[in-house]
Length: 95
Image 1 (cartoon, helix red, strand yellow):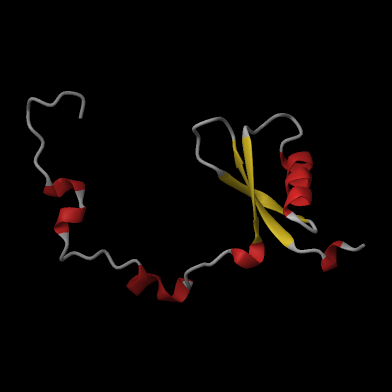
Image 2 (cartoon, helix red, strand yellow):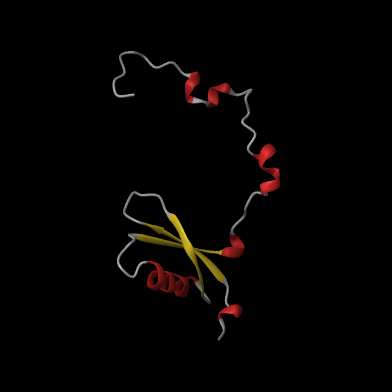
């Protein structure tokens, strides 16, 4: 079976427990178990990861780069969403 006929799965690897997952690439597979095995063989051969996520590429939803200005509008009228809005007491240490 050629890879062209198989669904594409995007692979995310967590380098160590508690770290952020990082996109590593993609694999072709018939199902999620095969995708996990292919991802493990391809991206964590040398024990580089502690956990793997695989997601069917067709299930990923993305914003449109052409709409970035309106989509990521900073909402300046809602200043309470920014950390600078709040006052920190001088008694608080370590901030």
